[in-house]
Amino acid sequence: MIRIVLADDHPVVREGIRGMLTGYDDIDVVGQAASGPEAVALVGVLHPDLVLMDLRMPGGDGVAATRAITSAHPATRVVVLTTYETDQDILRAIEAGASGYLLKDIAPAELARSVRAAASGETVLATSAASALLGRLRGGGQQAPALSPQEVKVLRLAADGRTNAAIGAELFIGEATVKTYLSRAYEKLGASDRTSAVRRALELGLLGDATE
Image (cartoon, rainbow, N blue to C red; front, side, top):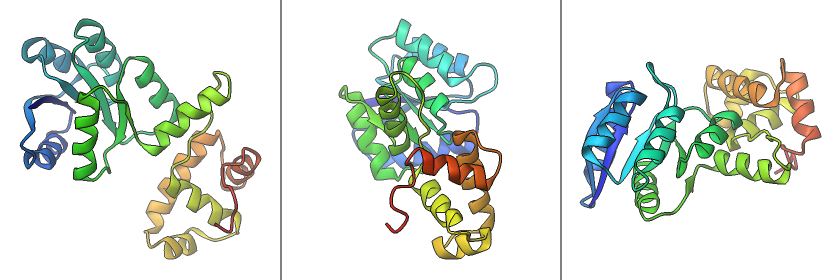
């Protein structure tokens, strides 16, 4: 049985994650925390096998909590489960001792597989997290932007001169969602607008073959 503590400041999110894992006989959610310090304290009492840790919580972030847990309780593994996927967030979490970095849009079955893998000693990474770490290694320690597959698709279409509405229609997503992907790409690329983001992505070879 893999005993898990959930750390997230949103009760609805914690219940959603617990619900995703409830159907698996080998996984048991034994505790829930609403902040980093609360997660650290709970681990000291419950000694779980694994903590699913959000990054940004009031009263102490997930990185500090991860560092405290992995230092004081080396038998407990920590896997970050968050909506944030910037290079800085990913690298800080891994450097703090996290055994994995997953995004909250993960499917239930994939989350269960990742929990089992992390509990057995493996490192589990979302695609964007793996790309960020690979870029760090290739760059000799420099952080390379890690665009998600959807961000790449949006930027490719933007490079073709498509409007946000046209990009949304092509990818079957809302215009607001397109803007969200673009904003994330701007942040990762250090760009202030669409033109500079596309130029920077092309310079770094992040868009690959635009005909793919």
